[in-house]
Structure formats: C-alpha cells, structure tokens
Image 1 (cartoon, rainbow over the protein chains, first blue to last red):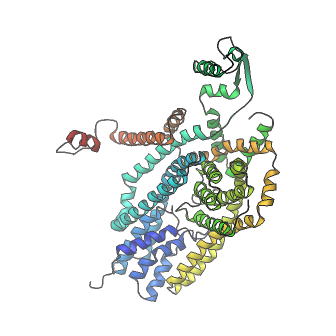
Image 2 (image 1 turned 90 degrees about the vertical axis):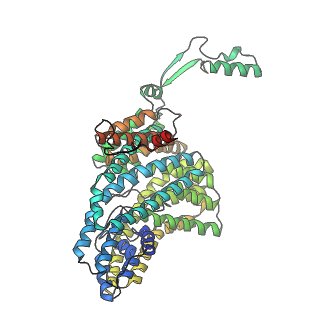
Image 3 (image 1 turned 30 degrees about the horizontal axis):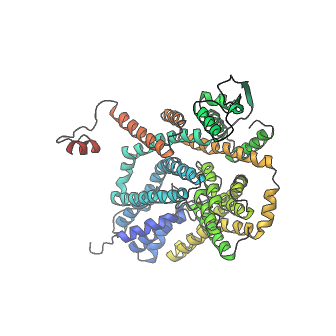
Length: 303
Length: 273
C-alpha cells in the first residue's frame, strides 16, 4: 500500500512524555482513562484524519483503564502498534485493543507495585531520609535524581519494547524475566525492610531495672585523680581500659532487651501493626494511637 | 518569622507542584524529603526543613496508592508542616512538633484527594462529549484542568496557613506542653512501624521471610551503612535466583559452546586479561 502511516520516533517520545501525566484526571468511575487518551493523542492524530475515525478512536481509549502508572508504558507501546496496524487496514477491532489493554494491566500492575513502591522507593527513600536527617542536602538531590532516572529510563525502554513486540509482548511478560525481577525485588525488599526496622523503629524503655554499686577498680575514681589536665588524661585512659564512668552501674529495661538482640521491641511492634492491619484496623488510627501511647508512656515515665 | 511577597509566591508554587505530584506520582515533588526541602530553600530555612523532610520520609516509606487502597496524603502533610515549621521560627528545635502536626494533616489531605477524584469523574464525562466530536484540543485542555485541580488541592490550604500568619501558628505551637512534645517525638519513633507493616503485608511470602531475618540481624552491625546493606541484599537476591533456577547444581548456562563463555562476564575479563 502506498499510503502507509508510520508512527515516528518523535511521536513515541511525545507519548512517553505525556504518559507522565496519565494519572492527572484519575477518577472513581474509569480511573486513568482520561490520562490514557491524553497520552495517545499524538499517535491518534497521526493515524486518523477524518472526524469519524478520530471520534471512534477517542471513544475507544476513554474506556476504563487502571494500572501502575509506570507499567502503563509497555501497554501504551503495544496499543500504539495495534492502532498503527488498524489504521493501515489490518483487521484489528475494538475488542482486540480493549482486550490487550485489560489483559495486560492486571498482571503488570502486579509487577509495578512490589518493584517500584515496595523496593525502589523504600530503599532510595531510606538512604535519602537518613542523609537528610543528618542535615545533608545530598539526601533530597539523590532521591530526585535516582528516582527520576530510573523511572524515565524504565518508561521509555518498556514503551519501546511494547511497540516493537506488538501484541506478542503478552507472552514475553508471562515468561521468565519479569517474574525473576518481581521475585528478586521482593527478596531485596524484605531484606532491606528487616534492616530498616532494626535501624529506624525506635522503641526505648527507660525504667531502671537495677543499679548495682560496683567494685573498686572497675570505675573511674574521680576523687583520686590529679586536679589538672593530667587528671583528664588519666580519666580518658581509664575509660579506654573499659572502666565505667560512675560508681553505680545502671541497667535499664532497654539494656536487658538489647542483650537479646538490639531492635527487638521495634520488631515486635511491627508484627503487632501487621496483625492489626490484617484485622482491618486503619493505618491512620494506628498512627494516631502510637502518638497517644508515646505521650502517655512518656508521661508515666515508661519511655 | 515573616515571609516577603516573593517567598510567599514561591511557597505556593512549590505547594502546587507537590499537589500535582500527589496524584501523578512521577517526579516525586510531593515526597517529604523533596517537598520540605524545597519549602526550606525558598524561605531560607533549609536546615530545619531538610531534617523535617528526612524524618517524615522515614514514616512515609511504605505509603503508596495501590488500586483502591488509600494512603495518607504526604503532599499536604509535608508542605503544611514545613510551612508551620518555618512560620513557628523555632528552627531545628521545632521539627518534632511540626512532625506530629503532619500526621493529622495527612488525613485531611486524604479527604481532599477523594474530593478532587470525585470532581474528576465529572471531567471525564466532558471528555466523552469532546470525544464524540473528535476534538483532541478539548480533551487535552480538560486533562490539564484536572491536573491543576490537584495542584490547587495543596496550594489553597498552603496559602491559607500563610494568610493565618506567624503569630497564631507560633502561639499554637507554644501552647503544646513539653511532656506532650517529647511524647510526640517518642511516638514518632514508633509510628514508622505502621508503614513498614503495610509493605510487609503486601510483599511477604514463605519464600522471602528468611531474607527479612538476615536483614534484621545484619542491621545490628552499626558500621554497615544502608548502601552496604543494599549491596548485600542485592547479592543475596541474585544468588537465590540463580540457584533456584539451576536446581542447585552446576551451571545451567547449557549449550554454551566455544570459548570461555561461562556466563560470568567478570570471570571472562579476568581470564582474558
């Protein structure tokens, strides 16, 4: 055929950029449908010239759509390929296009959530947050650059993959590679979660369990030190030898818990929250409750 | 602290961006570590806002919009608490009370999100009408309007707090007794657990729990940084995937004939060196 319309790389870049705004008109009726149609407009404009064709194409793409916003990209790629074939006379009907969209969005959202929301974001976020809490401006910069480079590269690459593979991509997706990525991501994610809980869930109990008067020689005898810089030096040397600073050894409840393993109380708290979530206790109530407990326990001197 | 006109405009602009991103979830301007820092940057109070952002980010690590599940709204939480921190003028000392204010704000933001998402339902019906005429321009325009509504969702409350001014905000913060302030920051240390619990509930399976245990135990070694832990975790994931595919025996690279192609690029480089 002489009048073949092709989607150019420029069109694909336009779609890629527009798909950034796919959630813009997210609504309770058809979710991402508005953003989806908006993203495809450069391609539809190129492929269809008459008013009737354009109207039916837009109607087709304003149907229900909801996926992970980044994983919509491979679906956009496939849909572009199908629309291109259709515009050039191939027998691709509305049902086929809708079928591809619906068939891909479920499984792909299932990949996007664990990989992006539960692995990449917590890891980058935790590193950036710990830098920022220490007062380093590198925290936010690192987050912004790392997140957007990963996201944009991912969206472009998978959109191209979708476009080139056409409808065959559905088979690719159910194949090994993406399953590996998902599983690898949840392994890494769980590992990091374990360490984050240890480091960042802070539960500290202050009650004193025991205070024992120690033997002479195991603490620094402040009274018998020379009364000048020499005394400071000796005190530091003695401390380095492992002598404690005061005569009385104070053991708090926290010290006892830390002897089992540091962070145990935080771990137990996390398990409690998981239990409550499964019992459908809203996270908001849990958060507010924990603040209330913090204030109350501090007031009675437990924390 | 009083802000001048340019600062106020910039703060509202940052709020608008954060509001847009709260729904788009792409550039992540709404993430506390970025949103709070930007507010700090334009108001000249970088350090306290940066620390507030980091603290809030820790809490929000596990918050995500999944399907119909609703997560607390980080955009309003970070923008509004940062503005309150700046207006309060307590500097770094004000971080813990600003942080406690952020949580109820996150809930309020959630309600606003629901409101705007409902309005958007009306917008897509206008888009339907435009589609019948094959009118691309009109659909684009309404898409932009919908995004702007999400921006205003945060920009308007931010402007309202700014209009309220430093005085009331400051006296409100000073009215909080010390024991409550300290208690709130203790609570803040525990609240992080809720976010992690949400993530674990989504991701956990019998297969991956051992990795959780390894991570937890390794983290007790204080000299291991998060980046170091990340490297260990990545290595473990790769090892596990390879082993589970090969059934634990030999290299499953099968069929690789010819030279030293063992599927190990680093090894190959060393061999050929």
